Image 1 (cartoon, rainbow, N blue to C red):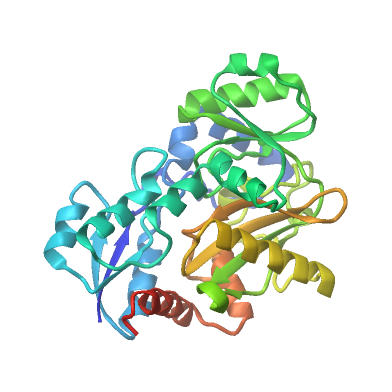
Image 2 (image 1 turned 180 degrees about the horizontal axis):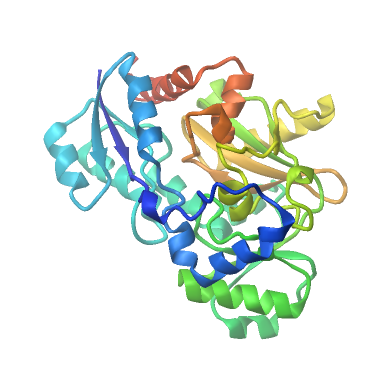
Length: 358
């Protein structure tokens, strides 16, 4: 089958994470300050993929298909129109705007070309954390309480319970979520809200902080055939001393290096059968009501009563190829006995089946 792999390539020179230093409590403040002062260069391209990842995906799909590469830039529409692939394997995060992840799927629908993954509406909704949480709340799927701020003045009319999380409204890959994003005072809240408004030029979501364990759950397939891969737990006790128990930008991209990986994940997670069932049920429910397709990764955290809540849904999960990269979706697949190459071809098979191509 003629497959086009559509992607955004990370600008490697902006990757501030590759310091090569061992994480320690001594460099936490320096790193956080550096990021805060230079946010755009630190995490601008965090969502995009490296040459290594793009090549690994191409090689995996090439085991069964003829694969062409198309970068998701301003010329992408014309390149796809000329190529006319039978199906697109979409990993493009998009370039501009809060609906950027929907750009390539919208082009493909205009061209009537099949593609993997969720449709433009689901991708746009899931990137906007508040819209996704509104849908979850409507269907009575537990998610932390939240409110959205459009300016600093919005804070004056709100009653805030501390601690709470402060995040950009429409970012992924831990962009804008730093160790300092967990705030405990009005002064810290004000500083973080101002930082996001200035650095990201978008609204801010302030979210109830849940004190329990955190998990991430890889989903594969559609409808009654959707499969929950082994649950990954994020072990915060492996982080440097003195940092907050959150999976921040520092934890994901700075302290956890492939040359010196943190022992931060446990997969399969050690959970009781009851908790396993609760996590799987809530993730299947969220996957269904948000109309995710083919694959997604869902972040879950336990509240103070031990009940799982949906934190975020990522319909375009990260898929770094090497085990030492600590990429959660491939980690869950390996725990299920599914190789990296087979994982990607199963995602494509799921999309092909939806379109009647298998």
